Image 1: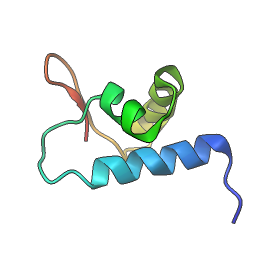
Image 2: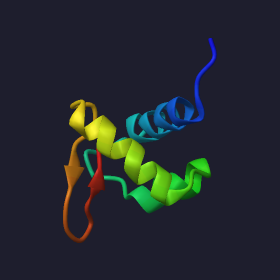
Image 3: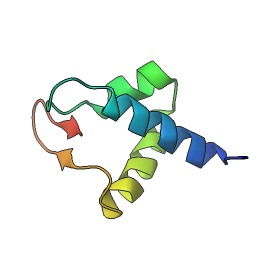
Length: 66
């Protein structure tokens, strides 16, 4: 199966979020650094995943996605 770059990055981000042991949100900067994804591109991808109900975002200090 061939995935686009956007699709591959989305899967990588979802795997990173799923690998978390706790319910604590993971910052986008942390995901971008670990998976070597440009932060601005990751923000666009996660906004689509959030709209689709696959990701929940938490605002404020200590916020992120889960």
